[in-house]
Image (cartoon, rainbow, N blue to C red; front, side, top):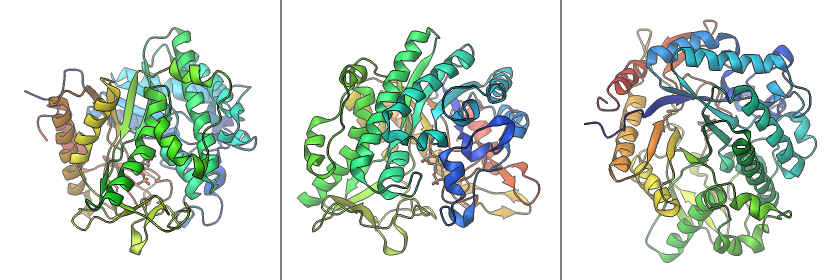
Length: 471
Ligand code: BG6
């Protein structure tokens, strides 16, 4: 018998900026990524999402492929500036029509939509007013969320507010690799607080709207392992885990920050400034589920002698900073180091499926029986093409091991309800261009973005029809 419950949502995921293109089509306003990716040197070889894989114009063809793949659910994001070109105010009805048609097309094929409201493409006009450092952005987000509930809530049951705070706040305000390219952890702390406020208020608005369905939050799940048993490495690893997990999960699942951790980091980065009412807002609006994006584990060592500056110039082009002897971390706190026994991807991300089982169970241990969706998981690689076929055996192998890891967690009592490999189709990697592929569907940029099924497409088809038994 399959470990996966009946009705388990076998899906796949994408995000608007990475697939849609049509960056100025039909009244869409500019986002911070439209602006950032056009800055010389900001991204790999100047790649951007102006056209991406043109999902905006080809979504019917793409949904037909999803249906053929057998997907039960599709996780995608809405581009806020497509609906509200300047972030608030006048609605762009053409943008509404695009998502409305996409939702209808999915439902026609019995594919359940899962919407992410924010996958990093903030309307540029709001950045110009201070972005996430300004509380008014949180207010604008709630109005935008309400608009989405009103227009799509009759058909969409699964919602998440934000994707991966650690990445868009961490890279946006600490490493500077993402817009707005700030390098100041204290500013990150406050921007992140406004994200939690926006989330909690959007959860409240969801419940007030009366639409049926569930609303959650999506975070990176990244296990940390100390490099050695030395007490300083163990402490460094626990601190990394606190920052990457507890800081970012507690406010949405417990309704408060981890006080002990904040006491430790207060002298370095300050603490979030609360406006009157924030504490109640967080406490009263715990979300319905948590989405986990799992890719890799980090091995952690102590990082003594120094201030809390970043140890590496984290260009982001290789993702985790292991390239050519570079390391990522905060002086005085911790650093990520290479695991000498680890298996790594071409982008130096450690492949460690056991971390997914352990991570799911750690969430259950800390937060109780919260429903879990694995909202991203996948292998970024340059896929081999042999006789015209994309033979992505490494991806199949990666996904197979991670599906087994989820089955293990379910057998140990975790309430995992769906799995969305990243990604449905090859798409734009924010900082790595189109060379880092993740999809079940290959896009040939030399042949007018023609779609082609990969070997993994046919493999995943069987996984879905057998409810995870054949893998
Ligand atoms: C996640 C994001 O961080 O990882 C995706 O939610 C992203 O948007 C994915 O594409 C893979 O990252 P990368 O850097 O390999 O493209």
